[in-house]
Amino acid sequence: MDGTPDQAGSTLQADRDHHVVIVGGGFGGLAVAQELGGATGIRVTLVDRRNYHLFQPLLYQVATAVLSPGEIARPIRSLVRPHANVTVLQAEVSGLDLGARRVRLSGSEHDLTFNTLVLATGATHSYFGHPEWARFAPGLKTLDDARRIRSDVLSAFERAEATSDPLARERLLTFAVVGGGPTGVELAGAIAGLARQALAGEFRRIDPAGAKVLLIEAGPRILGAFPEDLSDYAARALTRIGVTVRVGQPVDSITERGLSVAGEDIPAATVIWGAGVQASPVGSWLGVETDGAGHVAVDSRLAVPGLPGIYVLGDAAAAKENGKPLPGLAQVAQQQGIYLGRALRRQLRDGIEPPPFQFRNRGNLAVIGRNEAVAQWDSLHLKGFPAWVVWSIAHVYLLLGFQNRLFVSLRWLWAYITKRQGSRIIPEGLSREGGR
Image 1 (tube, rainbow, N blue to C red):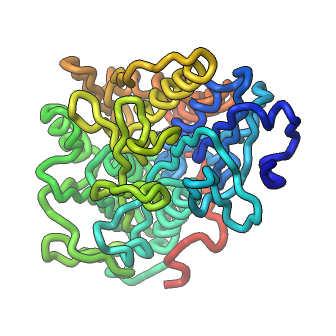
Image 2 (image 1 turned 180 degrees about the vertical axis):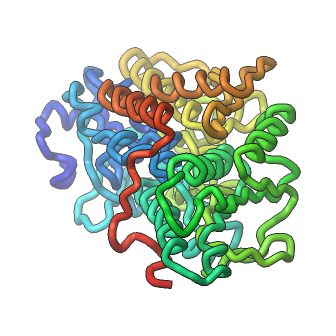
């Protein structure tokens, strides 16, 4: 028998069941667990260092004071509660013992043994060889990241109101977002909306609408994964709402005073990083080669070649279809999780070898601002208000739980009617600027 965490609530029958350990409670890992829920002869343990599932596509709205953290997060236990064969364990994985088929847990003397292992651990920020930049330019992957960015953005306006130094005020009212992908575009547009709409008339010494919002992209255009016409439209729409878009200009350095872009020093109190991601350390756990971003190669069934019974999916996997890498999107991870859960269920129950995974593209969506978005389904392109409506409906639909869908819908409706955002509280001790 395994250690205490693995035995909790178990029976002799459970110990004879096929044990599937899932590491990661994001879109992919949660989908696997839900698909295996209720399966006879299969015992599932879902391990995550947090006790909640996060709807990352709306994380930028927490960072820009549109939504509250609880509106895009749900406790993992509540999501798998109907499935008695699924156990949730809040713990951090420190490594694997592949020979003994064990998952090592940090701070615990007990390991988890597995028959099948699913690694869906996602990705973190990549600073392209400059980890020191993280101190001054937080990325956006977790609720803590979102809270910090929200605190930084709102505190900058407060400190600008309090200072009489014009240079200090200009720096405080300069917001730089590095990276022109969907996250960067959505953040830049949301900060511009906050400055020009939500904060209008609330300050006496400064005009928030005068804030400078920069979107900096090293590549030739923003939204590089979208068709060129949608990319161009997004750049024009951002310009209309007051965002300065700078493409073809790599970042040279980032310090506490601001950043240097293509040789130009830009004083900025708030710099946000959205330019790159690095997969979690799954490759080192497995002892296999990875690509430059740390992704583990998997076959058409999401299995790691040469390691029977071990699967990697989502942002940790270098999955391909027709020779082309699958994008690092929530819909990809979720579809992979559904596929793998069903495949394991049939394979373990009936001995049926699953067909290869096939990704069904539900469209690429990116919101720019109020009434502005872009959307693509193969040859169909939408821009402006129609794309914004589609984006809103899709994201409410994908939220987990009726309560979250209701709260987010009402929050958006209120913000749309009043042009006000409701989560503008600055928690003590979160701002990186402090008293500077």
